Length: 276
Image 1 (cartoon, helix red, strand yellow):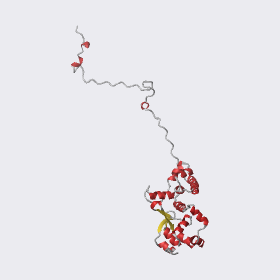
Image 2 (image 1 turned 30 degrees about the vertical axis):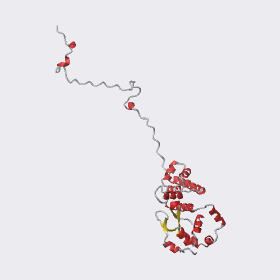
Image 3 (image 1 turned 60 degrees about the vertical axis):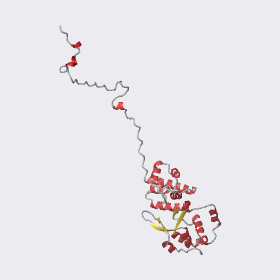
Image 4 (image 1 turned 135 degrees about the vertical axis):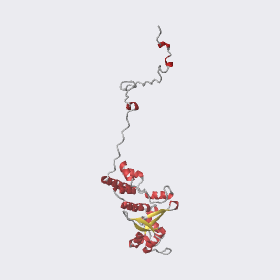
């Protein structure tokens, strides 16, 4: 097509393509990812037509990058674009007039790129998940917290699921515009998508509970009803009542001086014997 640089599948694999990571477990395979301009060149279509095909869900992004003014730059697997271009059934979508039914969907504002990215991303998270609770956490990562609470009403199960939540792809610092864009794209909002994810989360949580129950919380500590200070000292009832121990006699103070060695202590004539 005139006005476009033709990018063959081989060139896409080794040219200016960016990379995204996929695969399961601890092994990651590198996926060559093309932006809109590079993808349109590979398909030999205009950028406008490429974006329309992507909005209709016919081209599925593998990663994204937040751009200025909350815009998003999507990237697509080069291999999938090459397969789409080589399929004769897609010739009309690439060369001819877009069918009326599809144009009508575009006129309503349809854009399946975020949802299709979440679906692909969820598949990646599930392949990497280690254990049933991690799989439940992967699904919960795409839901708003209130939808998670509806799907997992037990607070013990919900706490276990929350432990395995996966954060959005790293874009910017927490609270930055780029981070908020990534957080927004990570969260499902279409009613039917939310319904399906809630159902999956409830099912996976049930399977996880059967496989490895969440630990029960420790029993609440009884209120402290220990003895008061008087009771700890053996005193009960009002002061002076039976049950109080007898007060020990006050210790006598030793006499430091006696009348023998200090005559001034016995000058009281009332206790002197009278002389007859």
